Image (cartoon, rainbow over all chains, first blue to last red; front, side, top):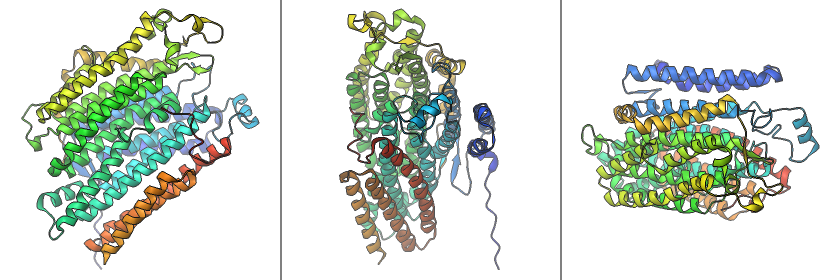
Length: 535
Length: 98
């Protein structure tokens, strides 16, 4: 009888992921055993302790250094992984703070009191009167966060597929749990679910074809097969590679919200509860671009002549569609959704540039991965802050998301309007905000990747995009409120003073936007150090 | 011989995609996604046989578990929306557009 050698897992390096996943499982138990009135506090404590521990472990592992593949070659813990884990945990914790907010909504959470109750029925009314709430949202968000951590770190396609589902399934549910406008919320959940399931099926079939081409699920195994050419496969082999690459790209670009796979983004961002929208907009994008870069640089990097032209077209389409359609929007959340699509396009320019050490980037030069990671920090901070402000601007029906009710906000609540303007300026890429440094770095790495024409197009589009951000600022500060809006019933929105957790989200957003805008050096250096994927 | 299975899986995947895009009932659309996942399973097992390795077959088990979890979440969402609207048609869900 032969003995089976026990695999080495490398628990220490995987600990941040394990802590978050375990906390989510414990959170489910808390739902079962802790009395109702203590659950919220218990869940919050659990979530924040877990994120804190995971953050400390991630940073200490990172400073100990070393790029290692652990978990029987299924997870790569390298520079980009550590950087992405750190920002995911920080932005995750900040959005959990928004989940905990109860003050703006008069003592109840932003989530449905009882999701199973049909809107407008006795059951729902009783649940509201009982002041029930779904504290399950925090374990669900923790599950999603653990999936987001595993997704960009996965070193083989099956782990990546499982991580994709761990991150998606809780998000589908969270989208359907809004307290107000429940029909919209449920509709958003259904659209997100159906399209998400379709895209993960595409991802899986792509993974199957790449497995057929290379005989391996490992990213490095696929890379070997491309470099060495697989014996005896001929044109059929190339067909498998190209088809597999295309289908994988569909699945990943869907999660990233790139055109032409963007159509879910505005609907889902509008319908979902705003804290969930903030969490999705920041963290899902981070996880998706991380996984996209890992697959296309590590596994398919030697075949980049085949995917670069197509991805350049996708990048341009994403920037243009996102920016142009954002101009026509009348709803703040929808406008921010289209703006997130436009930002996906700007990030894709750096991704297409593929300016990495393996492809001949010079020493000390800003690589694609490091510029994308810096952009993600800038974009994530401004996004979470902007959505936190959306939760605070309210009228009698809940959040006042109509842009028309934001007219003249600068006169009624100058501080809030000023902070929102900072985020919009960062989105627009105005100097002295982190958005400017982010835009500059992604364009620089696309330029050094040799895609000069793409950079020119991107700069032109970012001018167009700046227009609609500036338009909102002008509307808040310099437009007088129209007469009919000041009439009875449709009075403009008022800013409700939120609890400290939402203020913290706004504060972190402003601090990151301004500090990394004026003094980006250390963060850029950190991103620079962590810029190479392990192979 | 395994090539036939791969062709069959491609046909099933195409049927699933076309079905998803043309059918109007959320449950049927979801069944089409399941068909696509099963087509992927067939491809994984066929490639596994062709390559003479077991990892494709193991991957198929992972896919089955994930598909089961997806059914739970998906049916929960579809049933909720059916109870609200008395309809599981995708065309009726049109509050959010452009």
